[in-house]
Image (cartoon, rainbow, N blue to C red):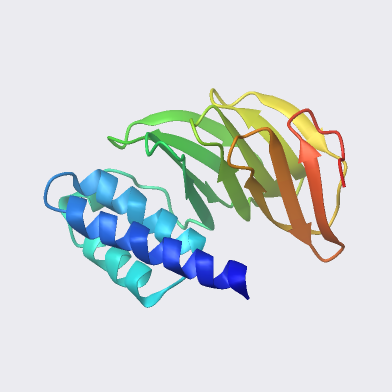
Amino acid sequence: RAEGLAASASSRVMAAKSNVELSRDPTLAALLSLEAWRLSPTEEAGQAMYAAAASPWSQVITAEPVTSGAMSGDATRLVTADADGATIWDAAGAELASIVAPGVTSVAINRDGTRLVTVSDDGVAVWEGDGTKSVVLDVADVVTVAFSGDGTRIVTAGHNGTTVWDINGTKLR
């Protein structure tokens, strides 16, 4: 319960930051609104996403239909996922790398945007920021993934429970 309340509070803070940035930097505002929604789908996050979608940024990133999205902790990169794979974008909306992985349903990106994790029809994989696959995790039935704050661990969660991995794919617990 405490984790849920913390996620909701973080989501509201991120949504407020999105609203502040909307007139100065619509692209950053859009990224912040997506991160707010990812943290917790609060009413404020939804409103921030609608406001950002109505701004000029909506013409910058054209990845659809998006099944998942995440923003790096330093707000310099965004990753979007769809049925064909994932795309890494910079804060200005320029495509940095494309990953081919069928049926991506969940993505996470580390704090500095140098690594990401995908959950797809092919399983769970760790990718470098340039789109190169570095590790495949030996796990099934994963629904969602996340990086630890320092980027050294990955958490997978799904129908078989929650597992913590190091960045090299070693199961820790």
